[in-house]
Amino acid sequence: MTPELKDIYSDPEKHISVLTGAGISEESGIPTFRGPEGYWTIGSKNYHPQEMATYAMFQQYPYEVWRWYLYRLNACKNAKPNAGHFSVANMENELLDRFTLITQNVDNLHLEAGNSEQRTYQIHGNIFFMRCINECKMKLYPLPLELLSEYKDEEITAEKTKLLTCPDCGLATRPHVLWFDEYYDEQYFKYETAIRVAENSELLIIAGTSGATTLPNHIAAIVYNNKKTIIDINIEESPFTEMAKKSPNGLFLNMKCSEGLAKLTTNMKN
Ligand SMILES: [Zn+2]
Image 1 (cartoon, rainbow, N blue to C red):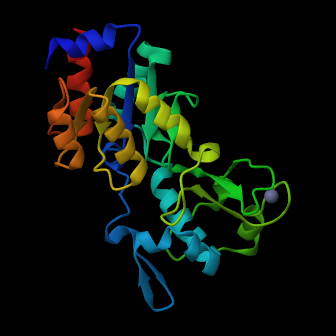
Image 2: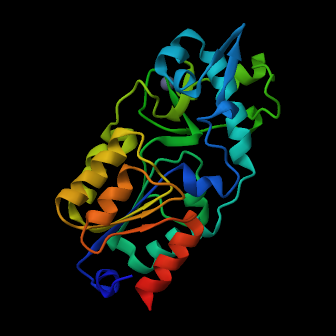
């Protein structure tokens, strides 16, 4: 590692951003749901996660989509933040307003580890919240935990249906996540703020994401084009790896997020 990284870390004028994806949560036992574990059967047909997590599917089969989420939520409910999450939380504790966390993860583990809501942009939502389908108050409602499904085939009972209605207007609710056929916005997903943060970042640390979605790619491209530093931590290479290697003082740490973040923070501080 280069001494420049220490300079960035200790310079009160410089902003550091962290961008995280599924890789950091995998170490807490959360499946990525992009593989077979995310498949769902409706009638006699099998659907991929990329088909399930869409507004189109929700319009057609709202309760099937809810059942899928309630089952997924069960996998998140008992998961605990790991050393990687705690490294990121410690970084915020030290850097305060010089720090921003942008996460693709909807599992709430960063907040549980101690990152603050105001400096954490959950750009794909949070699975522990629901919204009114009519956006009547533009609010998020905590998902009642009685709704969680233990088993894949658990039905949405009349009682559960009642819990899935908007507390303000009584219409149906939907999971507070960004679906594949939806667009980022500022109101729920901090789109413009995330772009602004990228513009001001001296260092971008990317942990456990291969950049399959547009906003993370956009953020990395901004930092790269501004000739600022990118560090990519991942067990496999991705389009971010090349950017990191080519950026000034950039690095690719080919290791698990927990190990890479520990190594990096130790080096930046000492
Ligand atoms: Zn409502």
